[in-house]
Amino acid sequence: MKYFFIVNPNAGNGRGLKKWNRIRAFLDRNGLDYDIFFTTAAGDAARRARELSTDLEDSADVITVGGDGTVNEVLNGLRLLAPVTLGYIPSGTGNDFARSMHISQNPVRAIRNFVRERRVESLDYGVLTCGDGETVRRFVNSTGAGYDAAVCSGIAKAKRNANGRFPFNPFGRFSYVFEGIRQFLLARPSRGYIILDGDRRVEFNNILFVSSHIHPFEGGGFRFATYADPKDGMLEICVISGKNKLALIPVLCSGRWKGLKSRRGVRLFQCREAHIHLDRGMPVHTDGEVIRNQTDMDVRCVQQQLRVLR
Image (cartoon, rainbow, N blue to C red; front, side, top):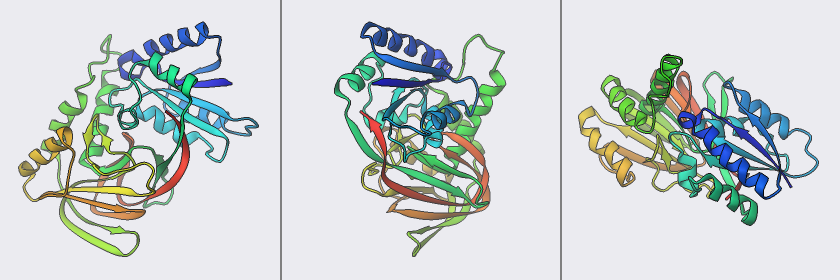
């Protein structure tokens, strides 16, 4: 079998390239056939994934080396009706997909498991459609609107501004925490509502953020969707809201250490699809990749149509 790698060499402050070098050494030692593609700009991973999964005659393993954003690009590029299986070796900052799937951070151990055991699971993925009807994005972990997306946007902007000014990326593992504090101070909650499976409407006065999950984690280890299961055909919707922002700090901290459960300031719902409305446009993300501000979004779960290596 030939393995197709899509590598983001700049992921995780250069960890993408370092991990790829260790993977390549393993492949060469074991005489395995592989093809390598390095991304250089946004959209490269999606284009390459689309090329690889178009007109496939034989099955193919497409293995991503990068962060959750690179996985999201590959997912959005793949033609999932093709006989293609997605693999992931984490080398980003958050690595929430790997955390949920228990994929080793050690690249040699991860690729060895893929090659020698080759366990394949069929998992759910999500689809976000924004109110304009033109923005449609798949997501593997989660999509969110409001505070969590503002954090992603702030990190991306800081990295762009720092590009070329530092010989290293100063926004490493703790970037989510630092930016999270800053965006929390800036956050302006919004009124809004969600409609679950087309028939249950729930209104909120002060939404800090609303996120829709296939997997439990986002934001580099925050377990905002404690009960999310990527095989049950359901989304878990998490709404964080409250008139007093400061009272939500313990809520967010519990998401980091314990996982969220329904309590004051937290509402968790399960559904197959949902419509989300916010009275004020707020930033939106899919797996940490930011989309422009939106007021209306539709999310749905596509059940067990994504083949993933374990």
